[in-house]
Amino acid sequence: MRTSGWRNAPEWSLVAWGLPVNAVWEFAHSPLYTDWTSEWTYLLWTRLHCTAGDALILLGAFWVTAAVVRTRHWIGTRSRAGLLFVALGFAYTVWSERYNVGVRASWGYGPAMPVLLGVGLTPMLQWVLLPPLVLRLTGRGDH
Image 1 (cartoon, rainbow, N blue to C red):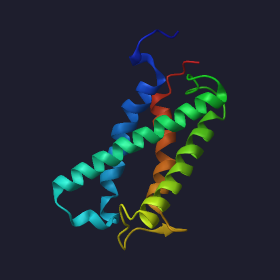
Image 2: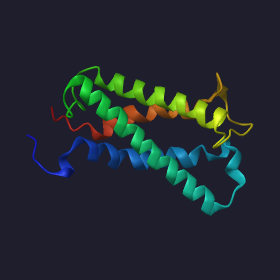
Image 3: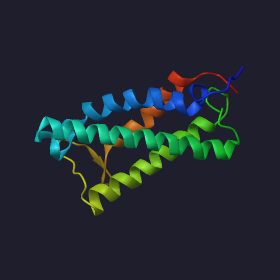
Image 4: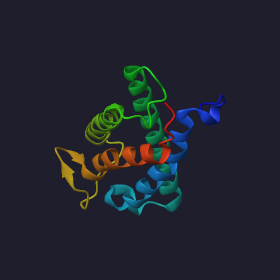
């Protein structure tokens, strides 16, 4: 049974789990970027900034998925909504990495970063592995 209130919104649970999971990933793969040798305050700021961006990607993919399946309460259902959710986050990440590394030069990959078709492998893995984990953690089953 659903109750009202922002704490019961599926978006809240998604972000509540998505932030710490993505923060761990962002800090863990930091050595694969060119700014790895920067001051710790810079690294802290940029990784937290990236984590906030990850939460926005999660939310964007969630809302597009919700629009397609016509309910915000699709997490925990036995539908293919989760596949769409992951695919949307992955597609945006591939575009963003190519644009921000290749066009804007907002960040760069260090020599240790494995690259596939011009995109870092760890950002792609992040959006294949973490969204299903976050969905599982949020899997409230409210449908």
